[in-house]
Amino acid sequence: CMQTSGPEMRTQFQQELDEAFTVLSAHKLQWAGLAITEKIAILKEIQGRLVDNLHSWGRAGAELRGLLNDHFAVGDSTLVTPVVLSTYIGVLIGTLTAAASGTFNLPPLETRTTPAGQLVVKVHPCTQREKNNPQTGSLLAEMYIQPDKPASQGAILLQKASKGQVAALLGAGNLGFLGVKDVLYSLFEVNQVVIFKPHPLQAAWHKFADYVLEPLSRRGYYRSVYTESVDETQAMLYHKGVDHVHMTGGTPTHDAIVWGASPEEQATRRAANNPVLKVPITSELGCVTPWIVTSGVWTDQQLDAQALDVVQALTYNNSCCCNAIKILILPQAWPQADEFLTKIKQLLRGTPLMPAFYPNVRQRYDDWKKQATQGALEVIAPLAVPSSKVFASEAMPYLIQELPFPESGTELSESQRYAFKEEPFAPVLTVVRVPAADDSSFMQKATHFCNHNLWGTLSCTVLLHPDMERDYPVAAQQMLDELQYGSVVVNTWSAAGYSVPHSTWGAYNGGQTTHDIGSGLGMINNTQFIDFPQKTVIKGPLTGAAVSKPISKMGLPTWALKPLAGFLLGGLTGVVRALWSK
Image (cartoon, rainbow, N blue to C red; front, side):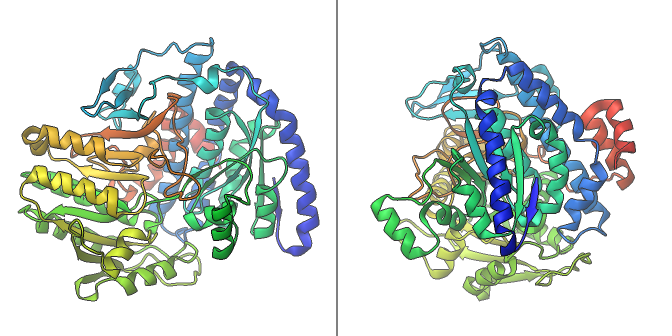
């Protein structure tokens, strides 16, 4: 890896960049044709390294957010990163092992056809081990296949070695493990060697990721570059050795890479279909994420569990997540709607404010606040977590506004347009109550609202009460079939779409192009190697635990988190290694 800063390093950076591309170009064909058994061996090496620096990695993740003195935040970073990555690697190993003979020896995937004629494939759980998983075993994940395409698997694995490709990757700024998973996706799902640039915010954290990925860099299949310079980043992206670009970030960054820096240049190049970037690009670019809450007679336990889920989805990482809840959609006639909102607000009052660690988060927050309907704006300001770093802004109180539902054919107000079309990436929430003649009508109107009024198609959550499935089975299923999101997650935070085995993660495949990119192009986490995915629907119980609750709510002593992570990664041997890890 290399690290440079300042214009005086430009020549050195270009030289080192050329050397990195020389190594990767020399090995890309070898990687494309490498035996699957050898790739499995490399994955096992990587998996084995996850336990070696648990505490240091956890502290680095907390420190960049100003939470080094918060033992719960350190515990979260210690536990989440290695477990998410190890789970993904384990699932990859399982599928690749089944494909190692040259054919897929997996159990046949169950299929069904929707009333509209779309093919749907069950992708989780597929093995007894997946069914027995205490966290995700109760979930059902189904992948919807693109219209008029077969439910075929493994084309990229079963095809003969191509000429190979070098992929240039830009990592996310909000969570470091997203970048590591992008690296593994590019290498093991789409057969590309990788040059990776972490976001500057994640630079110190990613040093530990480079250690984990050393089995790849040692063999010439992976390189990382560290720079805060736009010019140097462009030198990587537009290098003659790049065959493909993949990024996790924002739409403005994507459009600047593809179409140029200024709005004028972008308009000219779009009109002439003359992009600056001459190679294909895939991307994950965020969303104004909705939660649809259906009616029914909810128990206190159900209300409490889902209120906690909403609060976690709003406050995790200071709401700097592409799947953070932004729009809460309630039936206007639901008698328990106010009670549910009250529980959410009570929990927020007990959830300490995080440091404003993410670049420009205060500007996004202030912009959203200016456009909010002030009379309907509620400010919730609990105490802030003492920050271990100095940031440009103080911690930001939680903001909640209520906006009227836009009936079909009405023009959006400025407040509605901003709330529905701009992803704030800040701890703010908009509540919309939908008037409807009955519950079936509510589900239809909520679906239409999400598909046609909200920006983005990455993920959404539906809280589907059992009463609704029993009383309106056709309308409930139609809602899940028609929601145009890459991950439609029922009864838990849509973060489950990123972590549940075999569930794809990426924008809904609706024919978007780089001209109007929306939430992006392409899907990761396709560990069943389905050739033509469109979206995944994940269903679970209303009080399940598909997404782990915050560390502070687990009731575990913090000293137990390190051995727990070790156990989850490697059983009793992992516990011993974790206790001795740095």
